Length: 250
Image (cartoon, rainbow, N blue to C red; front, side, top):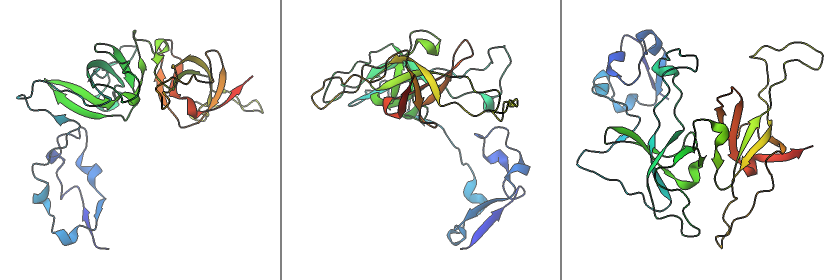
């Protein structure tokens, strides 16, 4: 298959304003495969602008979600660490929280429990980002909302539906033979203590099916499941679906 090799001399990073901190030397060696027959050249990239969010024109003054979708105003990214150190834009964590500003009519079965003005936590890659009225918003499904948070501490999260909040056990600092492990060598735990559980999923009749785990249970969960959070006390938490919990330990 034919290919075109682009180097730093052929593409100027000034044409990509959305990628802050990208230097010309880092574009060297980038290969685009199978486009030589199209006849793309440097002119094809002029004026290219990459946007993370869909911009809603000012002539539209309201957004009404449909079905079980929810419109939330995204919390701004943290610009400082807990210790007060300023973070560059590339190091700022993508927010996973916001405030509900509009809701759809809800699901066909069951009632919509999410209300306007409540603070929510949602899945990391959920929804569609919108720039509306000068602020960043997210249009997502109700099922993508992990829980309701009435404070600024994740340990106070109230999970929704089949979600479970778990305090992650601390990583082992020594091997079985007694050798100290470095931070990089410590294996991410997949064991923790249940802090809070949701009311359970809805069945076909619209009734809640209670979860089989309860607060206080020590559980083993799938290693790559859920959304990770850092509590104000420095502890690690994870919010995941009950189906990602594999066993209760005792």
